[in-house]
Length: 354
Image (tube, rainbow, N blue to C red; front, side, top):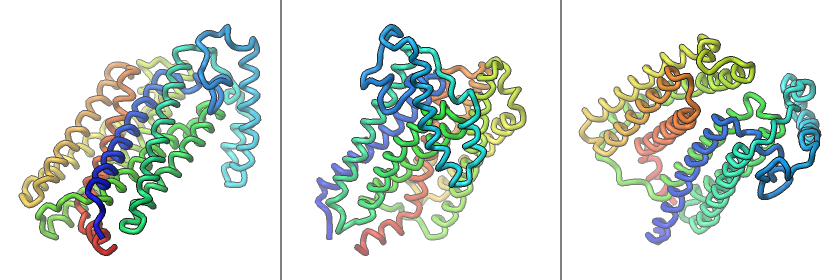
């Protein structure tokens, strides 16, 4: 049974718009983190108890720090109970006993509104993902996987909102921000899979051997990226810890030490892997579209390395950090799509068997 072409086209347009919006949120989230605006709103989902945040400290109670610190503390007490049951006793102890968790930042209207805009963008994306789920219901008989993965993306964004509230209540606890970011990448992956599955692209005329070789080479590149991502997360958390400890931006990377140097050097392995991938696709003339897509992917990897080098040489300029994060996220999305395209025979078989 074939779907109405107009319905397919509209759903694909909605899905690609949602994916772009998620990348926008990743960029805005990077701006929040690099500008130190993560605690611009000390509560969640409201901001200083209001749906529209204040613009002046005069609009807040005199003891606003104590008020919101206590609210976060009470929420963390409930959270520690769950963490202990799940075996995260060290994290629970930190939430209970580390005085820095209860510290409340001074009111800063710029940071407050940066965080508020971040939340507004998150709400818009939640609505878009909900819309993709609702629209996917019409495919429940012909392409049930579209409905399932749209639902998973919606559940993911709801869970992401809850994690965002935990990030605030724990005063940007190390690890929670990174987990928040990884969830965003998971949502991107689900949306890309949904976009691909609803109407797989016309296949290149590749031979089976070409597809298998490219698949393994791409998986190797993905493995390199995952290693680089994990180390990068550790470096970023090290930067946060160093700056919080009073270390200057110009010396914080040296203070981090081996992790930073490994992250910097390993980026070349990632670039070489993608150059080899593009070269292999280029020499396999039957993979015409994929070579162009891989070339763009390699360019994005190169730009990511350039942005990382700029941070290293220019004392981590705040405006480059979100760009570096966005480029890494785009690399991930491109890898997911290229992998699905190389394995599109499976997707096509799924579609035709329904």
